[in-house]
Structure formats: C-alpha cells, structure tokens
Length: 68
Image (cartoon, rainbow, N blue to C red; front, top):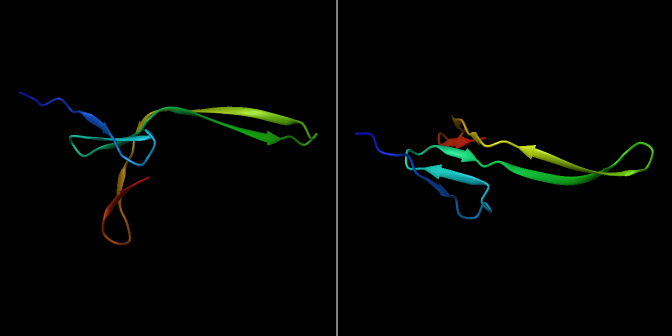
C-alpha cells in the first residue's frame, strides 16, 4: 500500500513554499503586484500571477542540495 504524500509550510517563508513527506519542495501559486512608470510618465499598476511548481534540486558549490 502506498503512503499519501503530505505537504507542510516551511516556517519563515510567509506561506510561499512547502516541503513534502517525500522531501520534495514546491513554491505555491501567488500573485505579485507592483507599479511601474511608463515612458510617458504614467504610473501603471501590474499584477503578475505565479503558478505553483515543484522546485528542482541541484548540488551547490558546497556539496549540499539546494533548490531554485
């Protein structure tokens, strides 16, 4: 029988990332808003949606696994 993978929020990252019981890390979907000034001097408010995705582990220069 297979075990169900459970996800838990990572403390200190304001609910942006979760780690699973299998050791996988994912970033959660969220919206980011910011304002920018266009060439004509008009301020424009922008909302960017970021999708939830699994992060890929890679080995850092110190030999430890990291995610990006």
